[in-house]
Image (tube, rainbow, N blue to C red; front, side, top):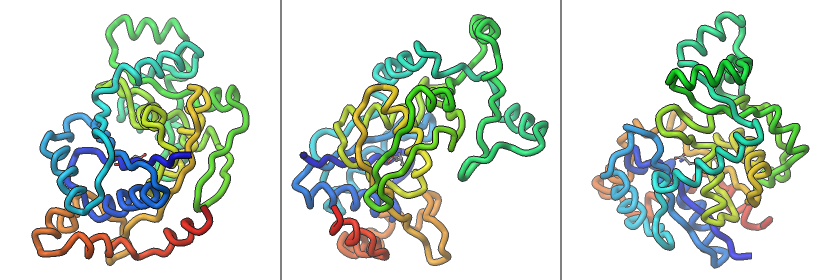
Length: 289
Ligand code: GLU
């Protein structure tokens, strides 16, 4: 099997050390196996995306000598593919329109007394799931803005038991209810991260999805979507996150740690890559697989 990995940043800023680790993991896994390393700009983040950041990210990667193969993919060029996937879920009643605003969701949580807990954020309280088809159609006909949410529990029952394989953690059983009814199509752009990432990993024939372990809960949703959309299941490697000196995860707002800023301070690519060496996990997984 030809190994294909990808690095999938959002062009909403320049790369920082956390990205260097993510890119390095994907790059080294592909190169070690004589495979391909692809670049995908996840540019469906609305107004925060800026043209200069596509180029900035590519410049940072080239400078780091983490060269990718082929043309970078832009998610904004793939909207028709996401629409088709959403339609296919819609045809089976696996998505429903959601008219809630953020504020209404918060009010609903307050009414419920306790918000249903997801792994790192409260889950959607299910308000619009209770609307009848007629009620939803009426609202849509009246022009109400709506997102489309995944009918996660029903989807889980339809798909049956599933697992995904992670190079660090082994075989993991899918819990369809873990994140609740996530948004698969946002009000503004008609798609969303969970749907787009699954459709594109299949389109780019990714064999190993490598990304931070903060996204492990999302993989439960992704595996379920793959099964329902008839897409292949890649292997996963959820790697540890880069932490700063206070043990906090690095964030984009931490500009001092951007690749561009560190380069301007005189660091070499080798030194920056070296700063992502803090954990030994890469060697562990390299031996096993
Ligand atoms: N676009 C995501 C990010 O910037 C990566 C998503 C993924 O690798 O699945 O963190």
